[in-house]
Image (cartoon, rainbow, N blue to C red; front, side, top):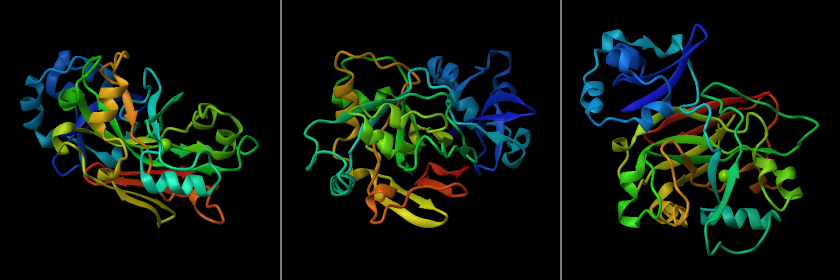
Length: 292
Ligand code: MG
């Protein structure tokens, strides 16, 4: 099952995609007056009884996807994004080669926060921010959405706390990232959080996820890996991060990026105005955005 936030005639709504993923049915059409209005509300008040109803939707009531604008599944993440740095071995190595910090692999997960003004959806524009950065970079990542509140979550229970998965492009201004010992600013400019195109319910993906993950710039393959290559897997990350920190329904954890970012090439291959960036993850769709 794939859920999405979309807008039509300036009105934002949420819905479920039909099996062929070419139409969307609004939750209001299915659940009537009781339908949640936002994805966060849907996740927070999630009722497992809805699943059967949602699975048996009348596809004829769907609106063609071409006729709506897909927004990020959660356009306004309540607490920013909890991000992982250097969670793939080959990416940690390419960053070290490019002079981006310490040699070797991290002994503990590197967590940082990405502030989000508004996450942009499939087809949205990534601002080039000329005058602020000249090293705009892309990072395809598997993002996990938490389904229920939990603290001190045991490793073997982690799957119960996951709602689903989406794709996140952790856009980064490398020059700003390197200027500051904290990455916060270089990761947080407006428009730096493309996300989507949908939110896949967790049953779409086996656990732990072993998904091919790729990015393309103007059709050229740049990143190509599998999420089984994580240095710290999802059970470890969610269990460890929740020690003493309450995770809430709707929180988003972005699990780090594979090798092949613009900074990993010599000479660098940073993004420029006019570029098209595509982030693709097996079973989760394709998130395309344009730089301008
Ligand atoms: Mg990242």
